[in-house]
Image (cartoon, rainbow, N blue to C red):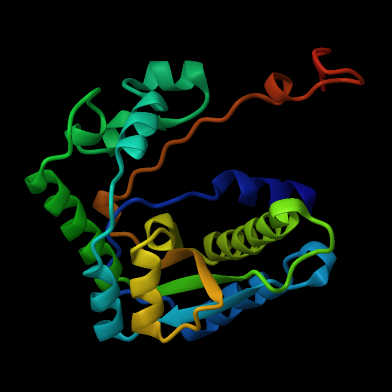
Length: 241
């Protein structure tokens, strides 16, 4: 059993491509994905989340039409974490391969011109609008673990909810991508307006569910080895397993 679970974890992936609008996630599979989120561990069992499942095409189009800022900070820090060949990427073992980004996001010091920005917005709009389902995960700041500074434990809890649903989606053969851009202002306010979400709730993230168009989907990833981040008894003593 443990081997099967580990295989599932290794096979989990984020699919950065447009999904097939003619292959929706079934209602049964969606129910299993949400059930997996229900059983995620949360700090103090506070269950500090609400979910909005969006499959109405007009609502998906409205969310896809939201314009969001791409900051200079994102441009700079994104570039610093890119690799520009598979060899470099596998040697670094962290970050992303630069080829998954358009030239403007992988060129140092380059400003994001209006034409490139509009292309990015258009791609995201299509990716969201032609989606089978978009699930918006809301963070309820009132449900917090006692004495957790900055509600750090609550943020960890949201990650647990995400991972449970992500693994279940992959186990069912559904493709999945986190959409973090909807959590930042002004996108957060627009999503809440479109979906009539109360002000007391914060958009934590959303995720796209569907099935990738096969010829557009390519998945590669890298990870550090266990010995790279695990210490034995004292920090700095390499753990060997």
